[in-house]
Length: 418
Picture 1 (spheres, rainbow, N blue to C red):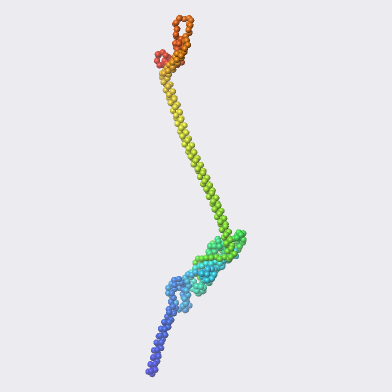
Picture 2 (cartoon, rainbow, N blue to C red):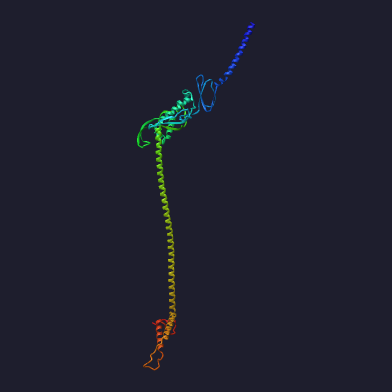
């Protein structure tokens, strides 16, 4: 019994050691697996959903460590970019552009990219995870179909040539709004529009947005809005039209450029005409004011001449008045002097001059002053007195003519006797 018991004890001891070694080996080998399936690290650029073995789903949006408890982990990017580009270096290595059909029957492929953000609330995140399960499915089943629907309903709102010109920005606006908020409810209307090449009006059927209170009526809500995905503004990098449409657009651009050049030339000609008119007006005004300056100078000179002539006339008038007054004064003076002495000095001067004249005449006379033969009377009584008598007579006459009284009776008696 003793040997048997010892053998049994020895076998039990070996079995216990083996169990310990096995457990240690299992821990060493399966430790990393146990740790990796027990906790999960969430990066700040991601969000994740953990599905525990009992089926419970946990939406994790804040960065940090989370208990996994051997559940499955699915991570989604917090923000990503979806490419619908024709460029092979954007997105997939294939043409992923979106098809457009316009109301004039033209076709085009629109190429670009759009960024989108995952929801961070529990309900939307769990709903996306349960329905799609990964990022690729979200892009191919939500983002791309939403953009395709927006492109499909935006094209009929304009013609192909309008999308390349006056409504180019509207195309981007329509696509972005419908992708984010839902497709428009539209109705078909007939429009008369000019042909882009011939200019002749033609009737086309076009889609028109149904409005209510100034707000577009939505045909259906956008899938991105339903799942809480935020679409950021998209970028269009190319619109590739059909060859026929490209040709029409090119010809239209040439026509428009021709019209613009003609308009520019017309505006330039009009501006040149205005400029020439303004220059002519300026020259006319310059000439007019030059004449006005000459006129003003002439007027000034005439005024100066008039003022000088007026002053000279006044000066002459004053001189005349002066001369008149001086003459009147001298005359009055002489009159008073003559009145005072009876003009004795003048009369005496005249009398003396008269006597001198008589004397000179008599002295120059060579004939006989008295008859040579006298009859009757006393002989020799008047001999030699003929000249004296004549002088006396002339003297008396001169004195009478001058009004002089030669008798010594005072100055008052020099006036003539009446």
